Amino acid sequence: MTREGTALLVAAGLVMCCCTVSRQTPIASFDGPPAQAMPISDEAMRIHRSAIVVDGHNDLPWKVRAKGNSSFEKLDIAQPQPELHTDIPRLRKGGLGAQFWSAWVPPETMHKGGATRMALEQIDLIHRMVRRYPDTFELALDADDVDRIHRAGKIAALIGVEGGHTIENSPAVLRMFHLLGVRYLTLTHSDTLDWADSATDEARHGGLTAFGEELVREMNRLGMLVDISHVSAETMGDVIRVSRAPIIASHSSAYAIASHPRNVPDDVLRTVAANGGVVMVNFFSGFVHPEAARMSQELFKDYRRLRAEHANEEEFERALEDWRRAHPIPRGTVKDVVDHIDHIVRTAGIDHVGLGSDFDGVTVLPEGLDDVSYYPAITQELVRRGYSQEAIYKILGGNALRVLREARRVAGPERE
Image (cartoon, rainbow, N blue to C red; front, side, top):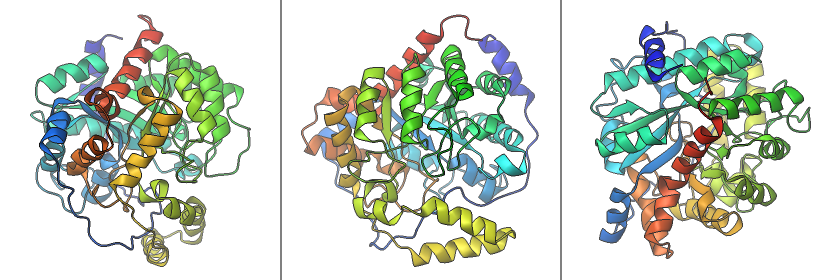
């Protein structure tokens, strides 16, 4: 399929659903004071502004669906949106160069049905966002697109689908996602699938099944990145063993620093280095602050319990809010996030770490990383710790772009 053919498919549009369901993760409340902006030195700001900052995961599309009925008329991100982490003024302030927007679908659709339809609606929403704000966004299909769009002063919009349940066990759906511009698939979300174990559910397969391995190979052929965030450590190992292309963890952190099963253990970090992949550090306090990670161990299990107990959506939301108030966790600071970067650099190397914020997919963030305007605080902390300009460029986005290029090279010219 040519780029022009892809554009025709996109232009055709998809019918949007007006239903809303709950937010994706039962995030606890926080017990700290409001964050204060970190002073940014001239050197840090110079480095930040000259880098291409790439974020591996932002859940704004789901917030637009849930809060704005999938309408940018009702939720106009060109205007300040203080209830969100993301809007265009703050994206500009934060100096973001490229964003993987998440087309997330609730895992319960795996049992209720409609996962593929809902994923298509979320992909359509991202395309409509790009068309709605053409002075800010442009769709990127590869790393060369990102470079070109960045030089034009726009933000490159990339698409990732979060959760393999969205393909409903169909390689054909995976291929159609790729034609619509999807450039990574997160293999699982919170629940174990027929073909892959999740980090936060019962392990049924010991990693990937044979069908799961076939899907990884098909993603390699397409040039689609294989995302190991949310999967079990055994699944991570199987993916890296099978994949011919570098893999990513689009929004995960280091297990050795914060021992939550959503994070990547050291033995896997070392194999990520051998594979050439990148772990993009998540900002959620429950995954980066050591004590918050300990307190968040039951997070996904409690979410499923509350969902089973409350069929009515409003009752479920109230129960979830009560749960949050009863389970406050410490926020930590931007230094906690950079501790994870430090650890991944020491364990896997400077070429294998990036940023995957999870903005608008979480509600508890470290002090100094309140929203998308705060990316320069990470650069400031990296400068303070003695990282060179070249190393900071790699962390902020260079490593992610290298992996995107390599995945396309592995796919070859016949990927469609």
